[in-house]
Image (cartoon, rainbow over all chains, first blue to last red):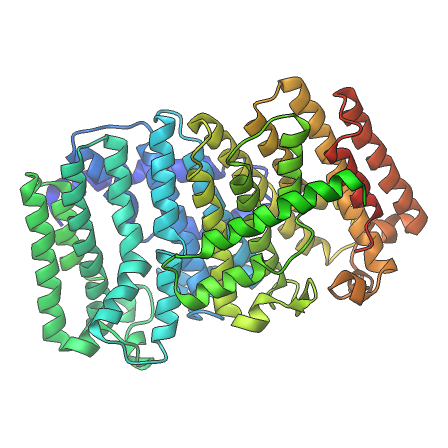
Length: 294
Length: 294
C-alpha cells in the first residue's frame, strides 16, 4: 500500500474507532442490543467508506470537525446492511470478516433489531452534527438516505436477489452493483465534498471518479471470490461460483473482468487528473481497491 | 367518536393517503420492493401517529405545509417496525390489520428489505422538507431518530422480547412500553410542537400528555387482547394470554388495568387543561384511545 495512504489510515482509523467507542459508551440502550450493534461495528473490515469521506476532505484541502462523525454514520449504514444481508432469509452467511455473523452470535431477532437501530443511529449522528451549517447537514442527510434506500443500496440488494434466479446481462449486472454498492461509495465522496463546500466542477469530476471506483470495487470482489482463499477473504471463497451467481468473471471470463477493472480504474484516474488530484489520497485508494488481496 | 375529531380525520386522512401515493409514484425503486413497501403503508391501521402530529399543530393554532410529510415520515417508521415485528424470527404473525403480513405475501427477504427502505424513506422525507427552517428540520430528525432507535422503539422491542421469558414487574412492563410505543407516540406530538414553534411551557405539558396517553394506549391494547375478538382486532386475539406474556391485565387484573387506564387518561387531560386544550383534538384522540373497540 502507498505510504501516504498508509500514514493517513494510521492517523484516521484510530480516531474513527475512538468515535465508535464514544457513541456506544454511556447510552441507555438495552445491554444485549448495544452489544450486538457494537459487535458488528467493531468487527473490522476495510473501512473504505469512512476513508473515502475523510480522504475527499483532505484532498480538497478542507477540514471539518464533523468529518469523523459523518464517516462513522455511513459506516453504520454499511454495517446494518451487512447484518441483514447475512440473515438466513437473505444470503445465509455464518462468517463475516473472519468472525461468526451477528445472528449466529446474538440470534436472528436481535440481529434484525441491532441492524435497524444502526440505521437509525446513522441518521441520529448526522442530525446531531455540531460544526456544520444546517443546510449542508440536510444535503448530506438527503444524499445518505437516497444512496442507502430503495433507490440505492436496498434497491440493489433486491435486484441482486432477483438476479440470483436468472443469468444477468452485463448491463443488468452493472445496474445491480451501481445500486447495491456504488451508490453508498459515491455518497461517501459526495458527503466529503459537501463538508468541504467545494465547487460544482470538482463535485462532478468526483462523481465520475466515484462511479468508476464503485464498479471497480465490485469487479475486484468478484475476481477475488475466484482467486483468493477463504482464509484470505475472511469469508467463504468460491461462493459465487458455487451458487452459479452472475459475476463479472462469469460473464466476461477472468481476463475480461481484469480488463474491465483496469478500464474503470483508468476512467477514475482521468477524472481525478482533471482536478489535479492524480496523486491524491483518493488516487491511492483507487489503486488499493485494484491491488488488494482480500 | 367525537364529531370534531371525525371531521378532522375525514379532512386529513385523505391528504395523508394522497401523499403516500405521491411518494411511491414515479420512483425508480425495483417494482417488487416498491410494491412490498406500499402494501404495508397502505394496509390501513388507525393512523394515530400522523393524526397526533396534525392534531398538535391544529390545536396550537399553527399550520405547516410540511405537516403531512412529517406525519407520513413517522408513519413509515411505525410501518417498518410492524413488518420486522411480524417476521418469523420475531413475533411470527401471519395476520396484521386483517391482511396477511408482509413476509407472507412477499417473502421474508423482501419484507426485511422493504422495512429497511421504509425507515430510510422516513429520514429522506424529513431531510427533504421544503417549508421549514433547516434548524427545526434537524430538531425533528433528531427527535424521530432518538424515539425510534436503540434508546426508543427498537430498544423497547428488545426489552419486550427479553420480557417474554420472565414475569415482569409493573415497573419493568412500563419500561417496555415507554420505549416500544410511548417514545414514538410522544415524538409525534413533539414534532407537531416543533413545526408549530410553540413555547417551552406548552411543550412540557404536551410531553406529560404524551407520556400518559402512550401508556394508556398500551394498557388499552392489552385489555382489548382479552376482551375483543380476532375479527374486531384484525389480528389474533388472546395472543398475549396464550403466550403467557406479561400484560397489565395479567399483573393487575382486568379491573386494575381499567383503573390504571383511567388514571393515565386523567393525568393526560390534566396536562391539556393547564394549557387550555381540554376540548382540543388531542383531548378527543385521548378519549378515542380509551374508548376504541380495536
